[in-house]
Image (tube, rainbow, N blue to C red):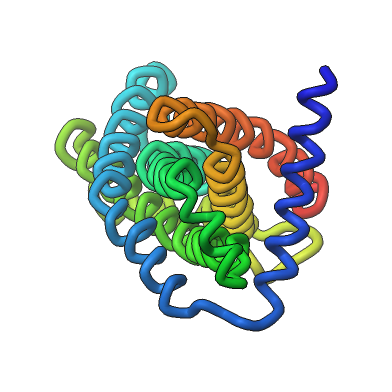
Amino acid sequence: MFGIAVSVHEYFTLLARLLRSCVTRPFYRRDVVQQMDTIGVASLFIVVLTGLFTGMVLALQSAVEMERFGATIYIGRLVGASTVRELGPVLTALMVTGRAGAGMAAAIGAMRVTEQVDALRTMGVDPIRKLVAPRFLAALIMLPLLTIVADLVAILGGLLIAVVKLDLTAELYMRSVYETLAQTGFVLRYIPIDLIQGLVKPLAFGGIMAVTSCFYGLRTTGGTEGVGRATTQAVVTTSILVLAVDYFLTQILIVLFVG
C-alpha cells in the first residue's frame, strides 16, 4: 500500500514538472514535430481500420435489433452518436496506446537502462523537458485529430452497411447522423454537445497516455527485461486509466451540458 502511495506521489510530481516545462523555455519544437509524426501519422492506418470496422459492426449489430421495431431508418443516429461520444475517443486512445504509448515507454526505458537519461542530466539538460514534454504536447495535438479521423471513417463504414445491407439511401443515413450530432445543450446552446465530448475526451486521453508511458519509462530498471516489464505496465495502466477517466468525464459532461 505504501508503494502505491509513493508511485502516485511520483506520478503527480512528474505531471507538475511536466506542466511547468511546457510553459517555460527552452522549447524543443523539432522534437514535438517528430513526436507528432511518430504518434499521429504512424498511427493513422490502424486508426482508420479501427474506425471503419467499428462503424460497420455497430451498424450491422444495431440493425438486427432495430428491424424488430421498424426503426432501421435511425441507424445513422445510433452510429453517429455512439461513435462520436464514446467509441471513437476510447478505441482511438486504446489503439494508439498499444502502438505509440508502448513505444514511448520502451524508448525512454531503453535510454534509462543505458544511462542516457543520466547523461542528459550531466550535460545540464532536463530529461523531463527534453524527453517527456515533446511527447506530451504531441499527444495532446494528435489524439483529437486521430479521433476525428476515426469518427469520420466509422460513420462512412456505417453508411456502407446501411446502403449495401439495409437498403437505406445515403441521404437518409447522413441526414440522420447530422440530426443527432447537431443537438446542443442548455449551457452552450450553439455548440453541439457531441463536438465538445468528441474533443475533450481525446485531449484528456492523450495526456494520460503520454504521462503514464513516460512515467514507467523513466522508472525502468533491470536491463532489457525491465524495459519489457515497464512497457507492459505502461500499456495496462494507461488502458485502465482511459476507461476510468472516460466514465467520470462522461458524468461531468452530462451534468454540464445536458442537465
